[in-house]
Amino acid sequence: MVKKYIGRTVEIIYVDRTGKITQRRIEVHDVRGGLVRATCLVSNAPRAFRIENILACVPVVNGQPHVS
Picture 1 (cartoon, helix red, strand yellow):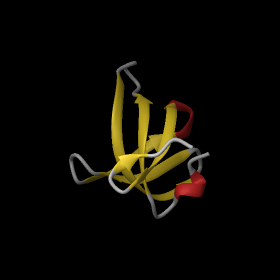
Picture 2 (tube, rainbow, N blue to C red):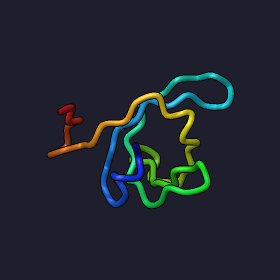
Picture 3 (cartoon, rainbow, N blue to C red):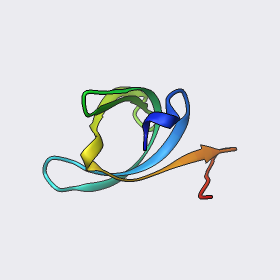
């Protein structure tokens, strides 16, 4: 699901290892081995997200989440 967004910005709903649910805007760089490697655009830092912990993912178009 996320792999098609490599090189694009997406907004995700993510549950971390402690169970905390967050909404994040990320730029996807790579998807492999069950991980999404990306830059978090809020902290401007590289991050890795477990695919199974991504609850929702939508592309960002013109600065806004785009649900088709």
